[in-house]
Length: 422
Ligand code: AMP
Image 1 (spheres, rainbow, N blue to C red):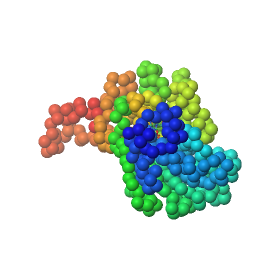
Image 2: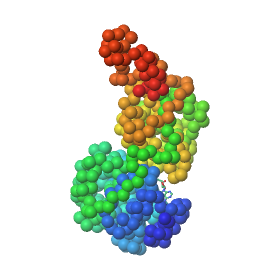
Image 3: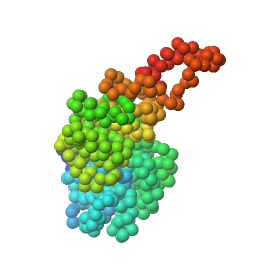
Image 4: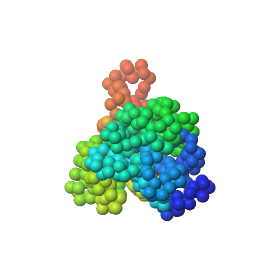
C-alpha cells in the first residue's frame, strides 16, 4: 500500500514525501481509513510503530477543510491527551511536520513550566491541543480552555496514563468534551482497566492491533550479562570503551541511579547526561537535543522520562537495571531497531533481579542470549538464587535417599545453573 491509496489531501501527502515516508506502516494502513470515516478506534500499538502519524495524518486531513484560511476563528477541534511532556512535545512536532502545508495551528501544554506562554497562545486560539492531563485540567479550571467545539479526542499511551495514576483525570477530561466527538484510544497493552475505559467512553469502536507487546522487535538483538550489582558501572564503562559504543540509551530504575551512572561515566571521561523527573523541563529538552545531536554519547534515563521519546536510528539500549514490570522491557528495547535499522539491547542482571528476568523471558517467550566471558561475571558460588536453592543433600543422605536424588543429579543441575542461574 502507498500513501496515495489512502485518499489523503495533496498538501498532506507532500509533507509525508518531504519526510521521506514511502509507505504507511501497518498501524497507519489499518487506522487511517477508519479514522477518516469518522469511526471511534482502539489501537493496540507501541511507540516505534508509527502510531503518532497513524492518528495525526487523518486528523490533519479532517481539519484542513474545516480550518480553512488563517483568519478564520480558531476553536480547539482536536485534543490529544498524553502522559508525559516528552511525548507531548513529540506529538506536537509530528503535527507541525505533517501539517506544514496547512493553516492548522497547534499547541503543546504540560506542567512544570510557567503557564503564561501557554495561556497567551490559548487566547489567540489553536486548532489542535496536545496536553498532559494535570495541566489541561488546571488551565480548564482557570477558564482558558473550551472544549465545546471538539471533533477528535485522542487518548495516547492509555496504559501508561493508567500506570501513572492519571485515570481519574482522564475520565474528568472526557466528561468535558461533547458527546458527538470521535474518540481514538491508543495503548501498548490492553489491561482490563483500559478495555473498560474504551467500553465506557467510545462508541462502537473498531479495534486495530500491531506488534503485540509480547513480541519484541525482530530487528533488535538482545543480550544478557549476569553481573554483580556493584560491578554494573564498571561493566557499562567496559562495554562503552571496548565495544566502542556511542549513541547509547541507558535505563536505570531510579533517578538517583541515573545520576550515579552519569557521575561514574563522566569521571571516566565518557560524555553523558541524565534525564529524569527531578530535572527541569528545559534541562531535559536540552539533554535530549544534545544526545540527538551527538554532543553526548550516552543518555541515562528513567522509564517515565524516556517513555515515548523518539530518537531516530538509536543503535544501542542498555538496561542497567532490569525493570520490575516486564512490559517495560519491551517498551525500552523498542527504542532501538526502528524504521528498518538494526539495534542491540543489552541487559544487566544482578542476583536480586532474577525474578524480573524470569517474568521478562516469559512475556517475550524467549531466552535472552547470555554473554559469558566478560570481565565482571557474577561469582560462581553465589550464582544460585536464594529461592531456587535445594537442600544440601551431601549432608543429609537419608533425605537424599527419600527423594531419590543422587549427587550426580545435583552436579548436573549446578552445571546448568552456571549457564542460566536457574
Ligand atoms: P511513533 O511510533 O509514532 O513513535 O513513530 C516512530 C518513528 O517512525 C518516528 O520517527 C516517525 O517519524 C517514523 N515514521 C512514522 N511513519 C512512518 C512511515 N510511514 N515511514 C517511515 N517512517 C515513519
